[in-house]
Image (cartoon, rainbow, N blue to C red; front, side, top):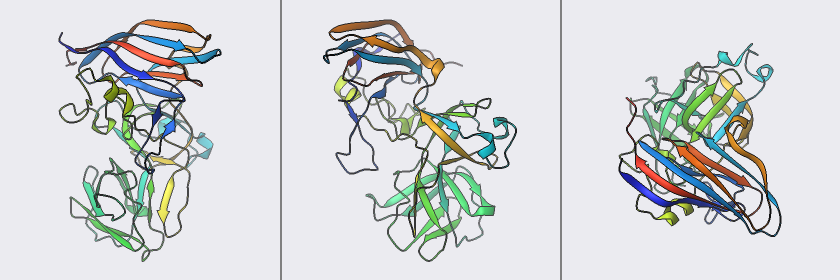
Length: 337
């Protein structure tokens, strides 16, 4: 197998290393205590070891996990969901392939021209609050009865934060609609979307690969290896480790309308049910390989034998500034057929 990358693959220092996102003005950085510090690219095998060094002056605990998501989204109790179903299997969330997605972004519209909207069409509009002003998204689900378009893959996460007045939307299939001050009840959210890696229908848990995540990979281009998915393959560890972007899913989301609000976050199922969520984490219990390990001051911990396949990530956490360093190889791997 051909070596794609070797040496230091990623570094991270909790509470010191920062991430940012497009929804806040620069620098807009947040010091993270936990991070998917590395994601194995497509058609790639990574083999390496993690070195953790504590020079903070006191003992700290660390977590390490192998994960396949950025956000673990727990749906609310069944009694809180529409219709109070008897099980989470009542919600359909196809998952596991590059064509499976989930979203909480919704546009409440009016002034529809009676041309049907269809899933997969591109929706376009102009928002002078953004640069460039031309905005797009993909239609994920059309709730005709409630005048709602559920969108994913926003060109900008604040694309629906339009200036006062009215905004006209046009789909690639010819459908048009409007939202704004002339149309009571209209508005749009700054929610989240991404590829749905897995839906646990027993426990009601969505494992989301958040489109607004970037470590050594840009998740906006996940599963599209011919474009910008791989950010760096020339042993430039700085570029791989310091360009972090993320906006974690939250239990409430911003809605832009005549009167702005922060409603509870809902994800739309493919059978049209608006599912409330109750909690969001980065990792689930079964994904830890090191959990709550104490590391004394001036101690070095080495975790050997780490092997990751395509789109598996190394998750690390500490509430203090220990240093995590991943050293290893990336090699071209044969794609599964």
